[in-house]
Image 1 (spheres, rainbow, N blue to C red):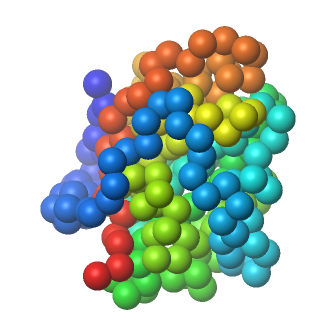
Image 2 (cartoon, rainbow, N blue to C red; image 1 turned 180 degrees about the vertical axis):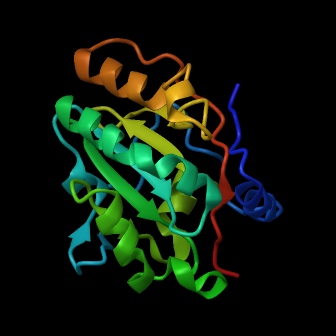
Length: 204
């Protein structure tokens, strides 16, 4: 069972985030091909990145995130560990901010610069303008993970792990386990979990 952040300010912000009901297509089913693999998105450094350009021999992880979400704040210290595991298993990692500028200035391309450099410089961090990629994925939550194999087929969708509050108390490291299974040719189990977090703030 997922455990929520326990700090009062974090819970307060999370409650506000979760009160917003996002509009999106049905979540991408397991076994689906990655939508819009060539869709290029800008990073804070001006470089353009896509799923195809980020993918490596064993696949690619697409992680929807954002700089102004309490749940992302609770999990983002684990991004570096996730990136290291992805590299070790020859899997690319693309972190995507799909939140609308108009609803949160903190989610603009300019505001992404500090998180991109303080979290980790080893993976692209890009802006999904108009939530085009998020809509194609049916992504609704940050953080939310979509892991594809070397043929860009979805093998895992959902949460990072089962404890946002305390990394040392994680019992089920869903995403790390999926990365290891994918990188070593094993079966990914479970294939889906429920991603808990802030709704992606789509354009009005």
